Amino acid sequence: MGNKKKEKHSTEEERYRYIGFDVFPGKAGKFWKSEEEEKSYLEKVKKKKKALAREGREHSMVYMDIISKFERILLTFFSALLVLTFFIPWFSLEKAGQAVSYTPLGYILDFAMLTNFASLGGFLPALLAFLLLFYIILSLLSGIGNLIFLYRKVKPFEKYLRSLKRMLFFNYIPVLFWIAAMAISIIGFSTPLGSTLGIKELSESFNVINFVTATSFGIWIALACLLVNAVKASDL
Image: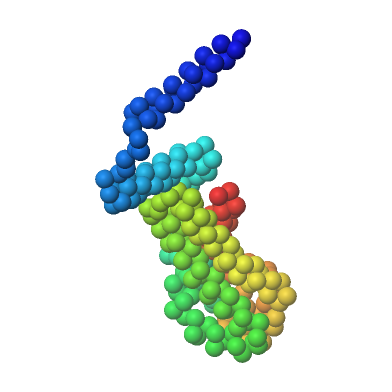
């Protein structure tokens, strides 16, 4: 029994002796020729490690189907449609028995005249005019921004998702202006000079029915596009 223990002990000693002093007799020399060579090698290892980690994250199951090709196409469609609504009627009024339509561009061009008239009715009409102006401008910026952020090249992939999420979440801002405009129309206000303009939608008072009647299909399409894009932000 004692011989077996001694034999085992000797074998271990021989193994360590072989790995150590038989290979490098005495004191082992330096592995690296210089400190620069060691630093250069370590830098290469770190870069390779980061590249492999990033590639692993980008192809990880965690990010699969977060935004599929179909969803990307869908977001592209609604964002492009949102931009195109800038050139179709958002407002439709009946003046002297004839239908008159206004695109967002027309609203912006006639905004100075509109605010002059709105200010005669007090604070609420002027506020409504400004809210609609901000709604128009922010809707256009949302559509353009969505298209840019959808297809810009950003790495790593998680950074792309964060930036896209912030952009899609931005679509909620014009929706808030729309809600505020609707709230003012629900409250309502008097338009004492409305009848003198000969516009059917502007009588002695203005309420939510007048507001909805004065809108055209373009403004509702834009609202739907904003909501579709904004809802996707919660999935990213």
